[in-house]
Image 1 (cartoon, one colour):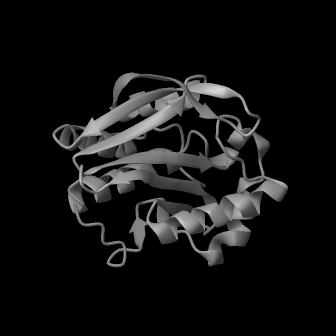
Image 2: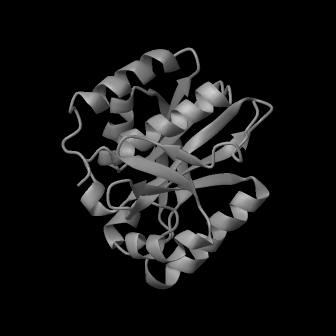
Length: 204
């Protein structure tokens, strides 16, 4: 498992591109993040005064190799739609987690989320030779739960009282995984879904 980000700093799809987070994204991300409904089920939020601590935390974790955060950009109009990340990176086990994903409300139900997942799963499985990818969601977040199920990931169980959110509420996390042996079929179905109009609407 060799994670060479320098050789491909940007992942490009049909409607979006994923760019490694940097200071040049600060203003655009700050504007995109300023919707309270985005952060309802997240351990941190990034609205108003909470944005800079969230942003600096992302940069710090990038520098330490603890987390790799991508900024999601609309290719057509170049606006920033949100962010997504790899975390819990275990090189010795060829395993990582994919998550901390958020999008502006206007992008909900569009191709942005499934296409970003496709790009990141392709990089992890096809380029880095990862064996296992984990995806988790707050047990109350039915929209996220259904999106992960639709992706084709396998539901593994519930981690009880796993996360403490910004309001100090303790919540359960439902865990999913995708294995390398399962990836070819999931990749095929996800690519078909994106090209067949399965998603409600494309990005405008």
